[in-house]
Image (cartoon, rainbow, N blue to C red; front, side):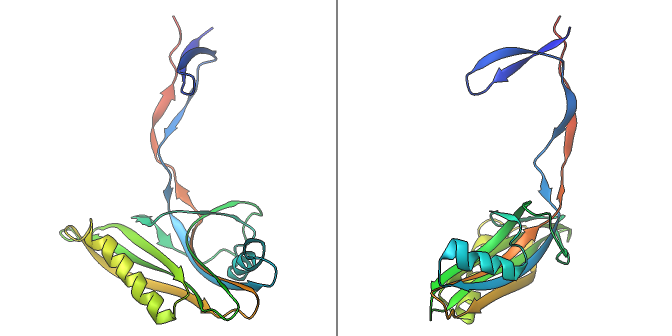
Amino acid sequence: MGSTIVSNLLCGQHREVNNPLKGLVIGNRIPKDYFITNGIGESDIAVHAGSYHLALKNAGIERANIMTYSSILPAIAQKVEKPQQFEYGSVMETIMAVAHGHEGEMVTAGIISGRLYNRKTGERFGGLVCEHNGNYTSEELENKLYASLNELYYNGFEQDYVLEDIEVIKETFVPKKKYGTAIVALCFISYIYPVLNRFSSPNKH
């Protein structure tokens, strides 16, 4: 019977495995389609089980398990309409701005995105997204969003790429209850899985 040697990364040991493996070697998945949504919530009970959940509900994504990314958009990423529904309990990966505050405070969250294009070829390279939140006016938040985007752009991309197609989405309100939350989220809903090669474990001789 064939077998292969598999490294145990935790113990630094090798073990023989019967039944040789065959399959595909998959690279890091690449986010493809996304939508943008926003919402507010307020509660007299709590933030995370209160105003935050209600802000997710207002944004239409409360039935998903939320995970957050950093600030990079792949070249293939494209904006689509928000789906009518999601599988209950499914994982939704996002770039999200979340602001919390108390009764009577300004609560403001926002994201800004822009596309990078090659200066020589015009080909789309990818995109940048920045998020910001706090007790700011809408104008103050927008200024901070542009400052953050420019800082990213001029520290790594400006020489080879132009930044265009800039979009700003903001949410701001003053809660009347004890706790308030505002969110703006870029939500990914599909992915490309690059196939690196096919794998077949060697037989033991």
